[in-house]
Length: 340
Ligand SMILES: [Zn+2]
Image 1: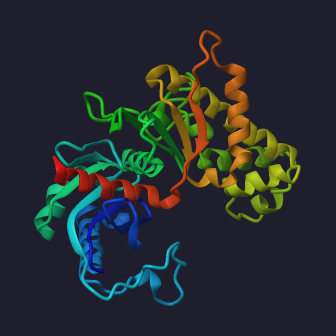
Image 2 (image 1 turned 90 degrees about the horizontal axis):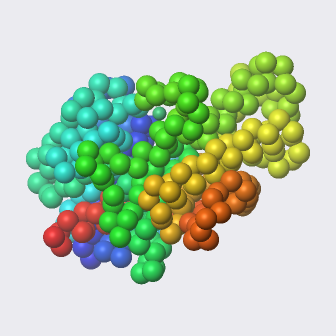
């Protein structure tokens, strides 16, 4: 590998993902390792540094051993040490990107006011920037779109919860307290389902992949019939992908649960439109694997519910980068930091 690159890290509750990324946003190499979040922040920081060192030294990816996951591109086996110019970290919030501190993270136990950015920088001796993980992913999608006419977009990442990032005027929108655009925690049902954040009725309790799975399991346990009842009775995990497949195969309960989630997403799209007026709202994360089966009902419900005062409505579309959005966005933010 003979060109300079930035290293993007996506710190998740289950895995730490990393990628070497060139200035254009192309991934040159990926690696990952389990977060082991239960060990607490010091151990997780050690594991991030280990991963960075592995990529810095050109050591073989642990993922590529023993028939690990197949890489999406073929450039995974560098023979030279890469020239890493900076590191970008996407971390779960709430956090302060400007101060590099993670205040708290729902899925990372014992994380309280952890100075993640500076602790990593001290260990590796490279410039480090830190950003909210969903903001980094939104920035990755924005840069990937590579469309000068598209400067204002929102990304909703539909996974176990709903991560969200907002790009306005080509820049991440942080807000005064630096935790803007937590769209997953917009309240869509006053006094609704309790959320891990302490509020009641958050969007992610109704429209995330996790919520869909929990909803159908609860309904089956209450006696409703479904093709997924056997899985539930056997104690097998049901995912939103299973629900989408059952719905597409004609399962009436799965269709109802899926459609209800899409209706809440439509509510979110309309509220986002009124809050920040983006040109585009992108749907990403595990649920977006359903493709048009997700997109079409969200668009249909949005069309039915939205205001009639004006015709300029955001385009609702599928995100493009999948699991790479976070590492690419974090690495591009690291590149940007060198230019300022
Ligand atoms: Zn919440």
